[in-house]
Length: 333
Image (cartoon, rainbow, N blue to C red; front, side, top):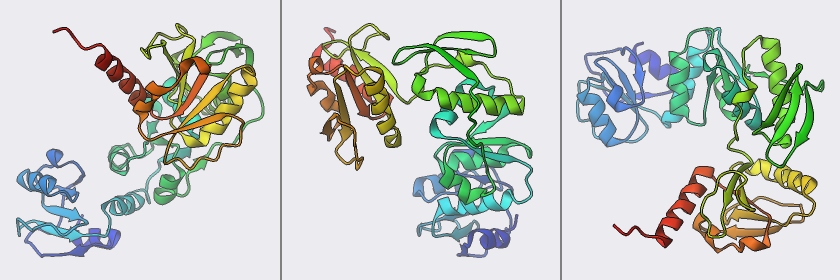
């Protein structure tokens, strides 16, 4: 594509007129740039690497030093917005389909479906940009981010709720579900019954789309994920302690999580542990404690509570607990 046509698409401003007037392909990672490519990015160090690797053009949002006048320099208000505009343009003649699923449905799909059937988009514009541009023309894209889909492909498909139950629940604990689906019984699947309606909708979609899947691949999602700990906050295997953190990274799912716990375990004492900056309005009758740093989990009186529901990232919490344990028990060597 020529630089002039690119500027029309992204509303860019050409800052110079070098002898080259077109580029081969687009890269957002400087180390992947090859001779003739366009680099999109604003960090001075990355720009230098891109030019050294043979970039023909730099599309940026700041005012970097033009270290090479033989390279085309194109200024935009936002590189992320430029990527969105390029995607919208590239999808005008595409036969690909985009699907929106809820956060839980998306997480379930990622676990049970064969990855060659669909491409999962994430929250990062730059990684999504590469996935979409490099995909085949008739790909299936799956996202749980409506805002992103509205920006690049407003004609995305929403898979509507299905009332017809495909799953028959036979037994449940707080974190495990046993159920029957199409004459097959699944025992102690690592999915709380809280998420079975989402699984039901996913199975409807996969069945109607004739896509292969494997329910037995289901393991704990990053939502309502249990983390068992000892009295001294050392991480224990699943079910090997009476103290458990329930980790939920999405504030929109906190209320449903509290309701599920209080319905399933009416006897339980529950603590809700929220970041201080959280604006979550909790209507349920539950003790709430705010934290400024996740390391404050070590100050919780574990014996007072059966469950600690924490708004946090699971990996961050587990790393914090592991580091805290190491500090208490330094190595002898």
